[in-house]
Image 1 (cartoon, rainbow, N blue to C red):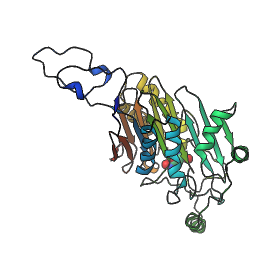
Image 2 (cartoon, rainbow, N blue to C red):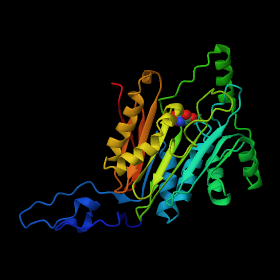
Image 3 (cartoon, rainbow, N blue to C red):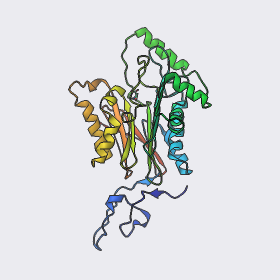
Image 4 (cartoon, rainbow, N blue to C red):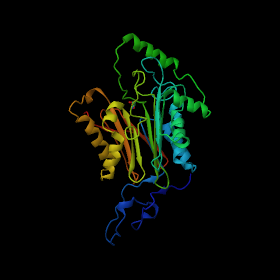
Length: 332
Ligand code: SD4
């Protein structure tokens, strides 16, 4: 394993720190002789964080970064793991369909320069994240929808596939029998994957991919492909990504809000908490009945996550350790 790099402008504060570089703003002053050196949490790089318990996805992204791959390759390949996993019924192939039985995918990606690409309500192509990346890199646009996105993917060499698996079809058919149009966001293990990564230079990018709300109305688009709502990256400040009831995230431009709060000095944790509070505090909020969560990272490599309900977790790959940790939450 090659040597970890630490955040660029980190400096060393004194004795014993030769092997434990510290974060930027904690290392400003020279310690006096008697002063005990305080070592604040160090952010070793690279760093990958993702919504929910997705250790295979974060491991893939980490592996790409460790091999000196680019941030976008890391994010794309990490997200592709979940898109290809038919057991994850909220992303890519095997995703739950809309109320008409069609699996429609939303995805977006954003790079260090603030460029972005997205696809919305795209059918028949497993790797929506790859199409989003191609939209960013190979077209003059930022977003392609529906058939246009699908045709663009095919013209770029991707193959059409039936994304509706037997398992998801069966569940949908059972739902049809109950015939209550009540989209419920899953607050358990698998969900939309939002992933943020920081490379050894301390540069940030992010990605998000989903099949959206199960049994949504045909044509419904959530927050996940909307830059500023489902994902936002400002390489000078930090990055954030959302999961949960997209309508509520869109109404508060959630991920942009988290990044702007970090710009104003809030930690990633505080910023996520404030963004959740904005949703919860709305006059007509019925937050007992839906779930939203954010994860975020700032330029110092500090991370945070917060959720309306219990059950959300964040996967972090850092320091050769792939960990899934339950997030703190609002509704006790
Ligand atoms: C959406 N935000 O389509 C997505 C779904 C999701 O956890 O994240 N579910 O609204």
